[in-house]
Each structure stands twice: as structure tokens, then as C-alpha cells.
Length: 251
Ligand SMILES: [Zn+2]
Image 1 (cartoon, rainbow, N blue to C red):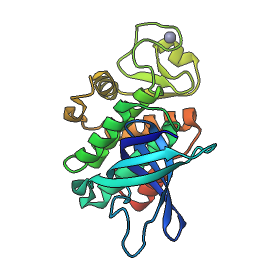
Image 2 (image 1 turned 45 degrees about the vertical axis):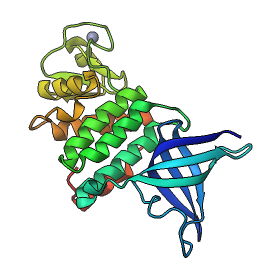
Image 3 (image 1 turned 120 degrees about the vertical axis):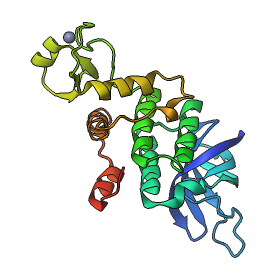
């Protein structure tokens, strides 16, 4: 029985019984895991406020024999991301990020970059516009998870001749040249500025991503492209973003 200690970000929480929760964490050591947390909401709760949604904890967990669900034996708060909780748009963005991780990341696949990306996104929600954080996060997560549209040569014929106002072929998984764009069905337009921004965020070494400015007019188009792409390739609709549109939240 391996005992694992790891930093972990709490993504999802379901009540099991009066004093226990089923929790999804994104951990630094083991990627996304699901664990049972017992002993909460007793007169003297064992875990303080360390099991709130979207906090960073130091957790200790171990595998139960023949089961995919871990037992969380210790859970200490490391960062409450208090700055992020200042307004509803930032919290909605955190919920959207948690849903993206839920959809794009299989359980048990370690990826330090995704952990760092999530941690830095939550910290940046204290200081940046939630919609900018969401656009940068989408591109980087899709890159790490292997779903990012191919952005260089034509994905269909490998031509390097890509027009300024190019098209992304959703089914083909990337940018197409003018000829292929005219022949193939299922394309969406992408403006030069949007494509430039996607390339900049995807090509960054990861350290400077939060300093990249989201150009004006790019937001709505990029949001549409990414959702279209994720809906097709992951076969899943995003509840959080649909809720946010209905509630008029700005991400
Ligand atoms: Zn082509």
C-alpha cells in the first residue's frame, strides 16, 4: 500500500454521508485522483477549511486494495486563493477551469505542467480579467492534453501557404490552406490576430504566459473556436460555460 504525499488542488466535491466527501483533486504527484475524505463536519472537523472548492492543499492519500478510489488521510490547507474569491466572475472562471480539467485529464496521469498551470491560473484570477485567464488556460491545457488544434502548416496537405484570415478544420484538427479550406466541410474562420495570439500562448516556455495580452476583439472568436473544438473532440458540452452565459457572467 503506497502512501503518497502531494500538493493538490481541490476541483470537485460530492457529499457521501454526513461526515464524508468524495473529492477530485489535481495533484502534483499523481495527476487527477478521486479520494474519500472522512471525518468532516464533526463538532471538531479534522480538516479545517481545507476541503473548500478550489483550494490548494497538502494531502496524504493511499490506495484501497482493488479500488480506484483513494483514501485521503490528511489534508492541510496551503492556499485558499483568497484574491480569486473577490467576485463571482472569478469564481465562475475557477469552476470553468475545474470542468476543463475534469473533461480533458484522465485519472492518474501525472503532469506537473498542468498542476502549475492551474495553480498559476487561480493566482492570476486575483489580478487579471477572468475572461483573459480563461482564454490563456484553454490554449495551454489543450496543448498539454494533446488536443490543441495544429496551428502551423495545413493539417490536410501540409502546405505552408496559410492565408491571413485562415480557417480551422474542426474534424481535421487544425489550420487548413485556402484550397483545402474551400474543399473541406466543417471549417471555422480564425482572424490573423486570434491565430497570432494562439501561437504566442502555445509557443511560450510556460513562464511568460500570464504576461501575454489578449488582443481586443479576439476573446469572443477564440472562445467560440475552443468550445467548438472541445465539443467535437471530447464529445462533451460544457455545463459551466452554458450556465455562465445564462447567468450573464463575464468569462
Ligand atoms: Zn491544404
